[in-house]
Length: 361
Image 1 (cartoon, rainbow, N blue to C red):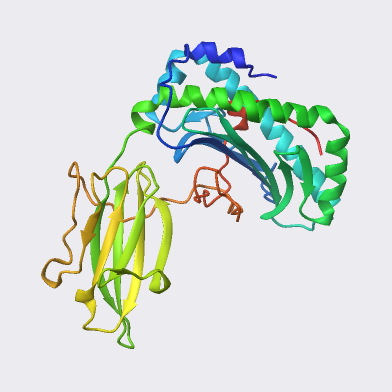
Image 2 (tube, helix red, strand yellow):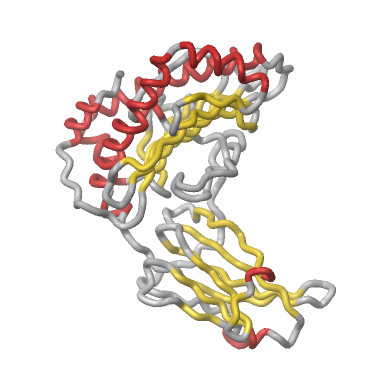
């Protein structure tokens, strides 16, 4: 393999604590998409340690190399230029692999003109004591599940009939599965440990949420109270609406946790009621950055005031800009893959960041 476990020595020795709070994951999202009349398919790859994007590769980028997305990876780029150059080379090899695989899929699926995509999600998760917990490897074609590697049995599952041919071909070559097994269970874990150590000041921080309750009136008279939390990290958070002290899950509409574009997250929950009942409702916010839960109510005279916990900062009102590319498919069974957030475009991480497992379709 191009990037061996020994390459970790380029970044120094591991000096990790025995346990870290919660589980941790290393995930890569990779996409190639056709663009008729505009040349070869574009390839994008994005890597995440937990909830934080840390590297990105774009075949259209002027740099033509892997790009750090956080300060702690910028230091690695500066301190180990040869290592970084090798990683960029792996990403370029991945570009050719994805383009070739996409061409094969277009033929196998008898796809017509227009835009087509192949996407891959792969990575690993470790437990709080940093031991291997699970690996995952999924392919999608045109936004639909295509091939999945069962990392319990290490057998391929074809999600659609058109994928059976590739499933049979890849299963006939045991080297493909063995290489993935070694990567997911061993190398991926070592890389994740190293990234956690290198970026621990950022990755292990706890930013407390700021929170606010606002009131909105619909044209037909119904009232909606919105409990909104933002500026928090990590992304796990609980928003609970209570009516006279009783939880109201059946009446609550949640918006999934979303990145704010500055390394923090935001989330809100709405509850609908009849006008005049607002004082009966309270919102409870729980987050590991808080010493105790926040309890908020709508206050007519100060509804525009935010409750800040921790350092004071500017309130961000804009959602994160969508990454360039096509929409990435959303896995319905994302439990254990570092949360339910999946980038909203074809950004996908450089498997080239750690390893080159190029297998032709």
